[in-house]
Amino acid sequence: MSELTSLTIAEARQKLRAKEITAIELTEAYISAIDAANGRLNAYVKTTPDLARLMARKSDERIAAGKAGELEGIPLGIKDLFATVGVHTQACSHILDGFEPRYESTVTQNLWDDGAVMLGKLNMDEFAMGSSNETSYYGPVINPWRAGGSNQQLVPGGSSGGSAAAVAAHLCAGATATDTGGSIRQPAAFTGTVGIKPTYGRCSRWGTVAFASSLDQAGPIARDVRDAAILLKSMASTDAKDTTSVDLPVPDYEAVLGQSLKGMKIGIPNEYRVDGMPEEIETLWRRGIAWLKDAGAEIVDISLPHTKYALPAYYIVAPAEASSNLARYDGVRYGLRVDGKDIVDMYEKTRAAGFGQEVKRRIMIGTYVLSAGYYDAYYIRAQKVRTLIKRDFELAFDAGVDAILTPATPSSAFGIADENLAADPVKMYLNDIFTVTVNMAGLPGIAVPAGLDQKGLPLGLQLIGKAFDEETLFKTAYVIEQAAGKFTPAKWW
Ligand code: GLN
Image 1 (tube, rainbow, N blue to C red):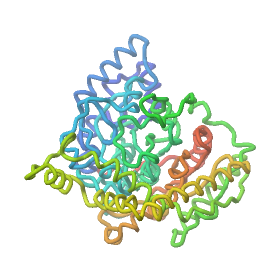
Image 2: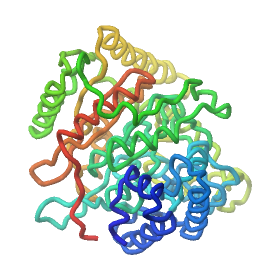
Image 3: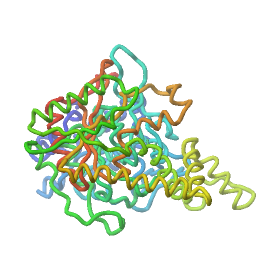
């Protein structure tokens, strides 16, 4: 049955509709694949095989009755950040120990309404804080990719590391993910998958555990551009329960795939050439430029002068919002409780035991930058920088640029427990250097695989678009995918 798990969503959809396969067969194939692989990859923190079978049977009934939804019978993995009724929703943190919500996130509800099947909850960095999936309470996820001739275990990126690894290893047909500073695009780049962070407001944040509310956006990680387009169409919606969700129709993203790039202007920002970036990334970028030129796009140099301030400003804004959002985990309402001699003691003991080191670091930074006397110097200043970053992009788009091409990450996947990174959290933060600007500006960004490095590991390119113009990103990413081909890891797990 292994060939069933190699079908893309588009292929499986076609075979399900033609009744060549059934949803229950497809679901059973994924359940077997997960059982065989998860011990090695640790992509899922909770599997829901009985629920998956129930949903798949209902899908088969709807298909038989001619009532199939857009994602009917498609088995998906869900990042542990999305609330799912009665099912493990712990943001991979110990503090949410045993939490099973009584409500469903809008994004997952949209997927189930379209007929998708839930395989389980995917591993991630604790509260989505991290770039390697190593801050998870449930242990690291192992990247299905390995360097040629090496058995070294690599990280899949983060925070959506479980989503990216599960998609790359064919342990789900597609996955939900979230991106606050790069958590969809960086793991997609590290695993040879496609990830899109849509415009802030495109997907509802309701029922998604909050990290930094002004930056958080949900999006899909998928095997190819078409599957990402199919998934985003279902995930996105206007939602009265999230006041930042935008009241705009959701286009048919698939319809733009294959359209010409003639007349389009692609901006190349000089500021995305950073010190110490491997030559191969530069080469990949040049190759991407050539592909888009060949497809009829005009390439123009642009300047985004405030880029260098994006990372430091992000690491003020994101922890500030996190410190506020995470104040609710006090041992009273959710998850873990460690008893104390009085209520304050109970709060302190619960939070000390429940949060991991990186989360504590963010809470401390956030509390510091929001405290009296430092608020103006740090938080307000970072917000001003944020406005300047946004303006850089606006000026480029006003000058006629349709999309911006950059590398997705400054390196390929690195090793688990890399000593260099463990010793200095700022080095880990540098992973997001090309992605955080996009969250700060609220714009859409897509990461698409564009080649392999000398070690045989995938590298991605990023396209950044105008607000609510995800269509241009899909159309352009599709051209890159056609030129670069698709990348699948050799199976060892
Ligand atoms: N790696 C970044 C961080 O640790 C971004 C995480 C994310 O996008 N959720 O904050």
